[in-house]
Image (cartoon, rainbow, N blue to C red; front, side, top):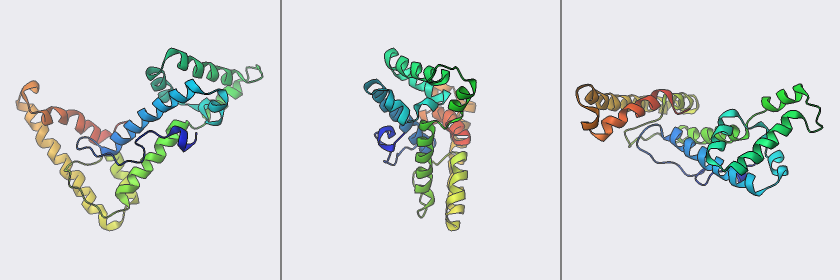
Length: 201
């Protein structure tokens, strides 16, 4: 799928958020924008668009997400196309052809991987500053440390450690206070800590 047809509206804008992992948050938003644009294009165009943009190989995760955000008519159009591709264009029901289609790379996944690499590069390629007090998840930390300049590595690790310490202080409040009476940042520290440690897959 080409970058012009799959790119979400905010794909080349740096996402500025103060909670959770900013890269995961950005990828999540781009993923939604991309699928929203995709459902518009599928509804408007013919099967040649589906073929040239590799939509015969859309993965299960993105197919399910696509199905949730679009109309039944547009979803049916894509699903009928996928069935025809699975059965073989000549109607031979070639089982090897079915497996071949599903072994190909999902174009949505490919695009999101390229956005992910670009977001990691934005942090890895510049002198590091972290004024927000919150930082990326462990998964993106590993990627950034692989790509960054040596002089940045310790500062980035310290930023991640500072972020975890901040979350630990907020989580501590929940051990002694009623969840609904605790400050908002303490309540949100539950999901922010999970995202910090595990990312948003």
